[in-house]
Length: 171
Image 1 (cartoon, one colour):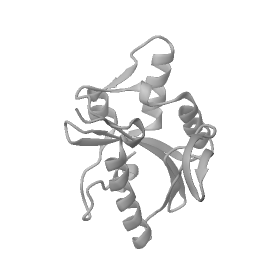
Image 2: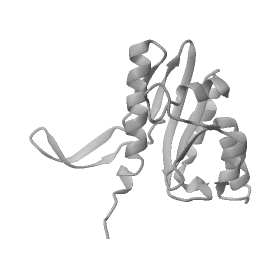
Image 3: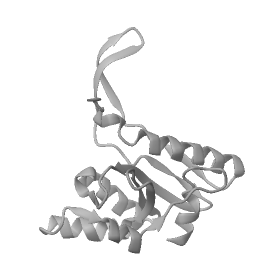
């Protein structure tokens, strides 16, 4: 059986988003920057890091501007066909989204259900409600039906596999 690195899950989704972001930048529609977590090297071989760990808690995967609207979002993938487990989200991420939206920005998740070949933009407001329910002892996942009813499906368009920008306008 093929081993899959925990850190590499979601890489295809991120690659598609990165391609879209390049096209958005080139067309002047948006300026989105991919964030990388800071790494503290513990063992090096010249300029190459052999071993290390993530330093601190990372910011969302992406931040930027759509016109004058500040946005931040994370990209998540799940192989689950019926729900998205909230264990894929961390408290510090929710707090970051809360601070971002309090300043007038827009925060969201882009979630891909890989086995269904469906991708959704989930507004922070929906995530926040579900997160609070989980904290208070409720469901620890977001059912697919919530995505279908309260999120925006992200479809291919403009020559892109993941054309997420039109979904932000709908939120």
